[in-house]
Image (tube, rainbow, N blue to C red):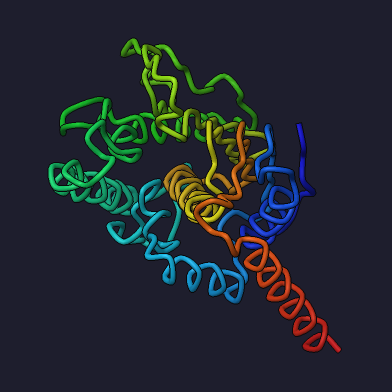
Length: 285
């Protein structure tokens, strides 16, 4: 296992991962672990470098990929968080915002399922209506929010008993954010995201995601942003603070075959990081 240094932003974590893997013979590495201390934090210049490369290759933009994990564009942010003892009307507003997110997504789900690669369901669809092919299934996010609020009302700051189950029975699904069926026997790594774990520690909600096959150019940056948005949503709805985001790629792929210029992309991302750091130092002086 290769654990990269803990960094503040998604941009730094992605750049480190790409640099590490692109240097490997064959451009692949097993068991690569990236950790973001401030989920959702970005360095815009790095995102710009990647989005230009994706546009040139006619691939999905970072925001589009992020929306497969958490569709932020469908969520109307109340701009305050839940807390024990919150006023009834304020809690109702938070609940309504979450309910509207779920409903808006499920209204779109039939159309989303017609898109290439979505015929088996979508990530967010599985989270809000298991198994993700139609409305009316168990809403794992709503159940998790209920559980976290209960913990907060009881003044509990630590809990690792709500880990994600991989068994496909309904009670197991209600305890976690399961994204694939235990009966999945396909040899090809589908879906790439197989596990999301949420752990409450010292009043902070930490997230760990496991990917069977992490495509570093096309998917990894957007995936980290989507996971960050998911954590921020759960924290807003439960009153806890966001903790670390950890992404474990059991196979990290620099996609040399699809992106022959991936080494240049890594170098450009590093240059953008260095320039941003120099600008920050200049502002402080």
